[in-house]
Amino acid sequence: MEIAILVLSFVILLGIGVPIAWSIGLSSIFTMLISIPAIPAFTTVAQRMATGLDSFSLLAIPFFVLAGQIMNRGGIARRLIDFAKTLVGALPGGLAHVNIIAAMLFGAIAGSAVAAASAIGGFMGKAMEKEGYDKEFAAAVNITSATTGLVIPPSNILIVYSLASGGVSIAALFLAGYIPGILTGLLLMIVSGFWAKRKGYPVGKRSSLREVGRTFIHALPSLFLLVVVIGGIVQGYFTATEASAVAVLYCLILTVIYREVRWQELPGIFKQAVATTAIVMLLVATSMSMSWIMAYENIPQNITTLLLSISDSKLVILIIINLILLFVGIFMDITPAVLIFTPIFLPVITELGMDPLHFGIVMILNLCIGLCTPPVGSVLFVGVGVAGTSISKVIRPLMPLFIAMLVALLLITYIPSLSTWLPGLLGY
Image (tube, rainbow, N blue to C red; front, side, top):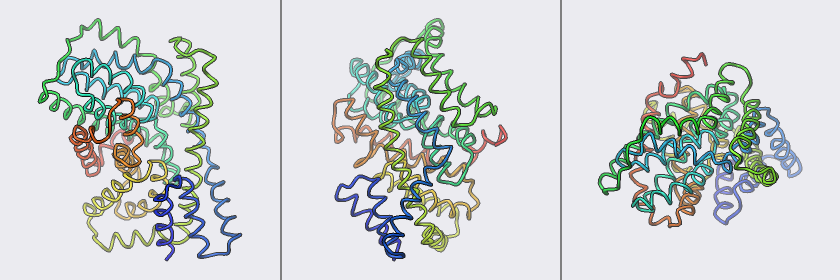
């Protein structure tokens, strides 16, 4: 009964256009009202929202958001594009490869798929169109490649998964994301290369070692942020939360070096970071209240029993979970999806003997695909808007890239070492 009320009220509220954070909170209250009187129900939900935000790890999110906002305005995207162009610009579909590599680098540094789609797409869309690429293909490449930055650390969503899972190491998650993120980018490059060759898109000139070195030096201060943040965490110099503050300080230093952000612009950047953080934190608070209510009503245990009654095969259960998450990603943004469905599926995968670290990467890559699909695909809408085209026109070139992401998902799901080898190598 309780699960029916929770799901139906949530779906109805979303269907009539209620914002997702409010939909989560209201459906949680409706579910509680079945079990207890109104005043204790409202009090319990409020308390769980407050305690859900009482986490030291969550402090990393506003700092990483601020770092991303500074990077988005500081000329970092252009330098990464120039560096990527010297590496792969001479391959078939060279500018598509440049877009993918630049999005992987920028998304990893900024920790935001939307920021990557906006910053890289703003530069690369016009450049690709000028060189003879179809506008829709350029948009499709930008949209799919931007999501790789959510898997490659540092990533806010990996921090959210750590919270939702009850304490999976953030450092281990950061390390686990490298190989899956790079693998996804490589598969996107392979598909883009075949598409470009079939369409006869132009190939750029080969860069000299001197040009590669010059662009690398220009991009090095930006790339070094990854070394500072991830290296500092792995070596134990600071925690992930402290690393986020270091990232902000480093980005402020970069603005002085690059001289592309005036001090007068910083209050506006801070204001935008606060607005983004407020949205994320409201989602976290309401999602944590829903997670508690699901645990109170034994919903995760019931779902675990149901799934295991369907089959005791790990292969079959993982296919079912992947299909559910792919479906969820179409209708729900990645942050609430991770917070709501991690407590539901974690007992299932634990029962199957799957590493929660591995499952975290599988879940996030799953939901990244949802960011590229309507009706709530935020990266899809940003990419289409930046390119100045429409969703209907982008769908055709997007489909082969979707398939590449699905292949990556299957490989990462059924080859656990792709996620667990690097953390294990470094002692996590």
